[in-house]
Amino acid sequence: METYDVMPSSNLFIRKLESFHPLSGEDKKLLDRYSRPLREVPAKQDIIAEGERPSSVFVIISGFACRYKLIESGRRQIMAYMLPGDTCDFNMFILKRMDYGIAALSRCQVLELSRAAILEMTEHPAITRALWWANLVDEATMREWLVNIGQRSAERRIGHLLCEILTRLEIVGLAKGNTFSLPVTQTDLADTLGMTVVHANRMLTSLRIRGLIEIDARKLIIKDAERLRAFSGFNPNYLHLGAGLADAQSEKETPS
Image 1 (cartoon, helix red, strand yellow):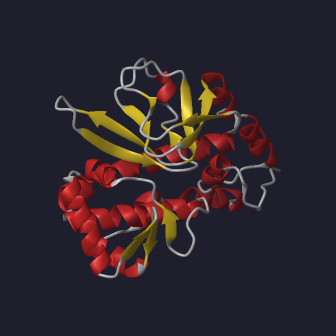
Image 2 (spheres, helix red, strand yellow):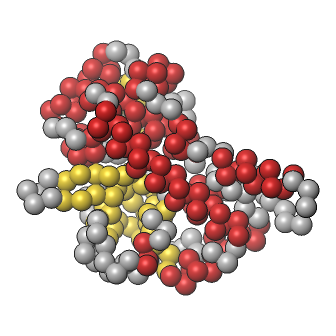
Image 3 (cartoon, rainbow, N blue to C red):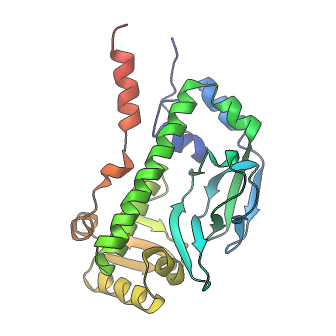
Protein backbone atom coordinates (compact mmCIF):
# COMPACT_ATOMS: atom_id res chain seq x y z
CA MET A 1 0.00 0.00 0.00
CA GLU A 2 1.38 3.38 -1.02
CA THR A 3 1.80 5.93 1.75
CA TYR A 4 1.61 9.69 1.27
CA ASP A 5 3.37 12.45 3.13
CA VAL A 6 1.15 15.04 4.80
CA MET A 7 3.68 17.80 5.48
CA PRO A 8 3.92 20.46 2.73
CA SER A 9 7.17 20.46 0.77
CA SER A 10 9.50 23.45 0.58
CA ASN A 11 10.06 22.56 -3.09
CA LEU A 12 7.47 24.68 -4.94
CA PHE A 13 7.38 22.32 -7.92
CA ILE A 14 6.43 19.47 -5.59
CA ARG A 15 4.03 21.68 -3.65
CA LYS A 16 2.21 22.65 -6.84
CA LEU A 17 1.94 19.04 -8.06
CA GLU A 18 0.71 17.97 -4.61
CA SER A 19 -2.17 20.41 -4.96
CA PHE A 20 -3.42 18.19 -7.81
CA HIS A 21 -2.57 14.67 -6.57
CA PRO A 22 -0.98 13.13 -3.44
CA LEU A 23 2.67 12.19 -3.88
CA SER A 24 4.52 9.45 -2.05
CA GLY A 25 7.93 9.85 -0.43
CA GLU A 26 9.44 8.03 -3.42
CA ASP A 27 7.73 10.41 -5.85
CA LYS A 28 9.08 13.42 -3.95
CA LYS A 29 12.62 12.01 -3.84
CA LEU A 30 12.57 11.64 -7.62
CA LEU A 31 11.22 15.18 -8.12
CA ASP A 32 13.77 16.56 -5.65
CA ARG A 33 16.58 14.80 -7.52
CA TYR A 34 15.61 16.58 -10.73
CA SER A 35 15.01 19.96 -9.05
CA ARG A 36 18.63 21.09 -9.45
CA PRO A 37 20.46 23.00 -10.81
CA LEU A 38 18.44 26.16 -11.38
CA ARG A 39 18.99 28.57 -14.24
CA GLU A 40 18.81 32.32 -13.53
CA VAL A 41 16.92 34.30 -16.18
CA PRO A 42 16.95 38.13 -15.96
CA ALA A 43 13.72 40.08 -16.31
CA LYS A 44 12.53 40.77 -19.88
CA GLN A 45 14.62 37.95 -21.37
CA ASP A 46 13.33 34.90 -23.20
CA ILE A 47 13.47 31.55 -21.47
CA ILE A 48 12.83 30.08 -24.90
CA ALA A 49 11.94 32.06 -28.03
CA GLU A 50 9.43 31.37 -30.78
CA GLY A 51 11.09 29.30 -33.51
CA GLU A 52 13.59 27.62 -31.20
CA ARG A 53 13.76 23.84 -30.94
CA PRO A 54 12.78 22.80 -27.40
CA SER A 55 14.86 20.14 -25.72
CA SER A 56 13.62 20.65 -22.15
CA VAL A 57 10.52 21.38 -20.13
CA PHE A 58 10.77 24.46 -17.91
CA VAL A 59 9.46 24.89 -14.36
CA ILE A 60 9.29 28.34 -12.77
CA ILE A 61 10.69 28.16 -9.23
CA SER A 62 10.71 31.88 -8.46
CA GLY A 63 9.52 35.00 -10.26
CA PHE A 64 6.83 35.51 -12.90
CA ALA A 65 7.08 34.34 -16.52
CA CYS A 66 4.67 34.47 -19.43
CA ARG A 67 3.68 32.75 -22.65
CA TYR A 68 3.44 35.30 -25.46
CA LYS A 69 3.16 35.95 -29.19
CA LEU A 70 4.42 38.89 -31.26
CA ILE A 71 2.49 40.14 -34.27
CA GLU A 72 3.87 41.91 -37.35
CA SER A 73 3.61 45.39 -35.85
CA GLY A 74 5.74 44.35 -32.89
CA ARG A 75 2.76 44.31 -30.51
CA ARG A 76 2.82 41.57 -27.91
CA GLN A 77 -0.06 39.46 -26.60
CA ILE A 78 0.58 37.71 -23.31
CA MET A 79 -1.47 34.50 -23.25
CA ALA A 80 -0.59 33.06 -19.83
CA TYR A 81 1.33 33.77 -16.66
CA MET A 82 3.59 31.10 -15.20
CA LEU A 83 3.98 31.54 -11.45
CA PRO A 84 6.29 29.78 -8.96
CA GLY A 85 5.75 26.02 -9.09
CA ASP A 86 4.23 26.11 -12.59
CA THR A 87 5.36 23.86 -15.41
CA CYS A 88 5.63 25.62 -18.76
CA ASP A 89 3.73 23.09 -20.90
CA PHE A 90 5.08 19.67 -19.95
CA ASN A 91 4.37 18.33 -23.48
CA MET A 92 6.54 21.04 -25.01
CA PHE A 93 9.55 18.80 -25.59
CA ILE A 94 7.72 16.88 -28.35
CA LEU A 95 7.47 20.04 -30.51
CA LYS A 96 9.85 20.49 -33.43
CA ARG A 97 9.78 24.28 -33.14
CA MET A 98 8.21 26.67 -30.64
CA ASP A 99 5.16 28.48 -32.07
CA TYR A 100 5.21 30.94 -29.14
CA GLY A 101 7.76 32.34 -26.72
CA ILE A 102 8.19 32.05 -22.96
CA ALA A 103 9.77 35.06 -21.28
CA ALA A 104 10.69 36.14 -17.75
CA LEU A 105 8.56 39.08 -16.62
CA SER A 106 10.75 39.41 -13.52
CA ARG A 107 14.03 37.78 -12.57
CA CYS A 108 13.28 34.06 -12.52
CA GLN A 109 14.84 30.89 -11.28
CA VAL A 110 14.00 28.20 -13.80
CA LEU A 111 14.34 24.43 -13.61
CA GLU A 112 15.05 22.64 -16.88
CA LEU A 113 13.78 19.07 -17.14
CA SER A 114 15.24 16.93 -19.91
CA ARG A 115 13.24 14.49 -22.02
CA ALA A 116 14.81 11.66 -20.04
CA ALA A 117 13.72 13.25 -16.75
CA ILE A 118 10.14 13.70 -17.95
CA LEU A 119 9.98 10.13 -19.23
CA GLU A 120 11.26 8.80 -15.89
CA MET A 121 8.78 10.96 -13.97
CA THR A 122 5.87 9.67 -16.05
CA GLU A 123 6.73 6.10 -15.05
CA HIS A 124 5.32 7.09 -11.64
CA PRO A 125 1.49 7.08 -11.79
CA ALA A 126 0.96 9.75 -9.11
CA ILE A 127 3.37 12.18 -10.78
CA THR A 128 1.77 11.50 -14.16
CA ARG A 129 -1.70 12.24 -12.78
CA ALA A 130 -0.47 15.45 -11.15
CA LEU A 131 1.10 16.58 -14.43
CA TRP A 132 -2.12 15.75 -16.30
CA TRP A 133 -4.12 17.83 -13.82
CA ALA A 134 -1.64 20.70 -14.15
CA ASN A 135 -2.01 20.58 -17.93
CA LEU A 136 -5.82 20.46 -17.75
CA VAL A 137 -5.89 23.46 -15.42
CA ASP A 138 -3.53 25.31 -17.77
CA GLU A 139 -5.98 24.74 -20.65
CA ALA A 140 -8.96 25.75 -18.50
CA THR A 141 -7.15 28.95 -17.49
CA MET A 142 -6.53 29.81 -21.13
CA ARG A 143 -10.25 29.42 -21.83
CA GLU A 144 -11.08 31.70 -18.90
CA TRP A 145 -8.61 34.31 -20.17
CA LEU A 146 -10.38 34.29 -23.56
CA VAL A 147 -13.69 34.95 -21.82
CA ASN A 148 -12.07 37.64 -19.67
CA ILE A 149 -10.66 39.56 -22.63
CA GLY A 150 -13.68 39.08 -24.86
CA GLN A 151 -16.60 39.68 -22.49
CA ARG A 152 -15.62 41.65 -19.37
CA SER A 153 -15.08 45.38 -19.06
CA ALA A 154 -11.50 46.60 -18.70
CA GLU A 155 -11.83 47.26 -14.97
CA ARG A 156 -13.29 43.81 -14.34
CA ARG A 157 -10.62 42.17 -16.51
CA ILE A 158 -7.89 43.49 -14.23
CA GLY A 159 -9.85 42.59 -11.10
CA HIS A 160 -10.40 39.05 -12.37
CA LEU A 161 -6.71 38.60 -13.18
CA LEU A 162 -5.67 39.84 -9.72
CA CYS A 163 -8.11 37.40 -8.07
CA GLU A 164 -6.64 34.56 -10.12
CA ILE A 165 -3.05 35.46 -9.24
CA LEU A 166 -3.95 35.63 -5.54
CA THR A 167 -5.58 32.19 -5.68
CA ARG A 168 -2.70 30.58 -7.57
CA LEU A 169 -0.09 32.03 -5.21
CA GLU A 170 -2.08 30.87 -2.18
CA ILE A 171 -1.79 27.30 -3.48
CA VAL A 172 2.01 27.39 -3.11
CA GLY A 173 2.03 29.53 0.03
CA LEU A 174 3.25 32.79 -1.56
CA ALA A 175 0.31 35.03 -0.62
CA LYS A 176 -0.32 36.13 2.95
CA GLY A 177 -3.28 38.12 4.16
CA ASN A 178 -4.42 38.81 0.57
CA THR A 179 -1.02 40.42 -0.09
CA PHE A 180 1.46 39.23 -2.70
CA SER A 181 4.38 40.36 -4.79
CA LEU A 182 3.29 41.51 -8.25
CA PRO A 183 6.48 41.89 -10.31
CA VAL A 184 4.74 42.94 -13.53
CA THR A 185 4.62 46.35 -15.14
CA GLN A 186 1.59 48.22 -16.41
CA THR A 187 2.86 47.46 -19.91
CA ASP A 188 2.73 43.74 -19.05
CA LEU A 189 -0.84 44.13 -17.78
CA ALA A 190 -1.83 46.04 -20.92
CA ASP A 191 -0.31 43.32 -23.15
CA THR A 192 -2.14 40.69 -21.11
CA LEU A 193 -5.58 42.28 -21.11
CA GLY A 194 -5.72 43.89 -24.57
CA MET A 195 -5.62 47.56 -23.60
CA THR A 196 -3.26 50.52 -23.68
CA VAL A 197 -0.86 51.26 -20.82
CA VAL A 198 -2.74 54.49 -20.09
CA HIS A 199 -6.03 52.60 -19.84
CA ALA A 200 -4.48 49.93 -17.60
CA ASN A 201 -3.25 52.69 -15.28
CA ARG A 202 -6.72 54.24 -15.16
CA MET A 203 -8.36 50.91 -14.34
CA LEU A 204 -5.91 50.21 -11.49
CA THR A 205 -6.60 53.70 -10.16
CA SER A 206 -10.33 53.02 -10.34
CA LEU A 207 -9.95 49.79 -8.35
CA ARG A 208 -7.96 51.72 -5.74
CA ILE A 209 -10.62 54.42 -5.52
CA ARG A 210 -13.26 51.73 -5.01
CA GLY A 211 -11.24 50.53 -2.00
CA LEU A 212 -10.62 47.12 -3.54
CA ILE A 213 -6.82 47.13 -3.94
CA GLU A 214 -3.69 48.95 -2.87
CA ILE A 215 -0.25 48.86 -4.50
CA ASP A 216 2.82 49.42 -2.36
CA ALA A 217 6.37 48.93 -3.72
CA ARG A 218 5.50 46.11 -6.13
CA LYS A 219 3.27 44.45 -3.54
CA LEU A 220 -0.42 44.22 -4.25
CA ILE A 221 -2.87 44.25 -1.37
CA ILE A 222 -6.41 43.09 -2.05
CA LYS A 223 -8.28 45.01 0.61
CA ASP A 224 -11.62 43.25 0.17
CA ALA A 225 -11.17 39.94 -1.62
CA GLU A 226 -14.83 38.90 -1.50
CA ARG A 227 -15.98 42.22 -2.93
CA LEU A 228 -13.32 42.13 -5.68
CA ARG A 229 -14.34 38.57 -6.62
CA ALA A 230 -17.99 39.60 -6.82
CA PHE A 231 -17.20 42.78 -8.76
CA SER A 232 -14.99 40.91 -11.27
CA GLY A 233 -17.20 37.83 -11.65
CA PHE A 234 -14.37 35.63 -10.42
CA ASN A 235 -15.25 31.99 -9.85
CA PRO A 236 -12.20 29.78 -9.19
CA ASN A 237 -13.92 26.65 -10.56
CA TYR A 238 -11.67 26.67 -13.66
CA LEU A 239 -8.62 26.22 -11.41
CA HIS A 240 -10.13 22.92 -10.19
CA LEU A 241 -8.78 23.39 -6.68
CA GLY A 242 -8.53 20.04 -4.91
CA ALA A 243 -10.36 18.18 -7.69
CA GLY A 244 -7.48 15.81 -8.38
CA LEU A 245 -6.97 15.26 -4.65
CA ALA A 246 -10.64 14.47 -4.19
CA ASP A 247 -10.59 11.94 -7.05
CA ALA A 248 -7.47 10.29 -5.62
CA GLN A 249 -9.08 10.03 -2.19
CA SER A 250 -12.25 8.56 -3.72
CA GLU A 251 -10.24 5.92 -5.55
CA LYS A 252 -8.42 4.94 -2.34
CA GLU A 253 -11.74 4.57 -0.50
CA THR A 254 -13.47 2.57 -3.27
CA PRO A 255 -13.32 -1.16 -2.45
CA SER A 256 -11.65 -3.28 -5.10
